[in-house]
Amino acid sequence: MNTKDIRAALTALVREIVPGATVIKTDVRKPVVRPSFRIDVLPMGGGAACNGAREREIDVDIWYYPKDTDHPRDECDAVADKLLAAFDEGFEAGGIWIPLDEDVSCDSSQDVLVVQFAASWVETAAETGEYMETLVYNQEEATE
Image 1 (tube, rainbow, N blue to C red):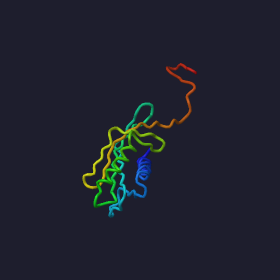
Image 2: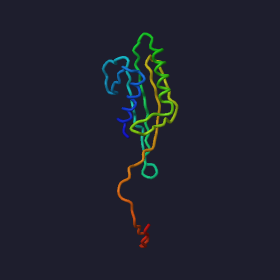
Image 3: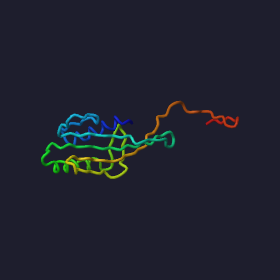
Image 4: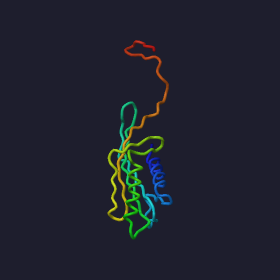
């Protein structure tokens, strides 16, 4: 699983919540089209786990720019409610269920909605090679 897969899953989810909203790339600095989302997925880290598995952690920020710039609070509140319901316990990306580490936080104090959460999961490593049929240990052969 990589950042691109997670961003694609989140993009599909927000497009269901606000049909017709644009999802702008995080590195676009042009004037913002409204309504639109910006999704930042920050890979926080990852490390080895047991049996060849890998622990992964991400931090996600989803920005929503409402269409109504005169009275954006109602629109932001409605989208926040839908996002909170959608991320109730986690989301699926690339066939893996990704649970949230903590509660989802929402802030619309600047007339733009910001939804933030962290998530972590364990990926299992693909097994390669063949099973060992004969084990030689301390110069003695053991066969199963």
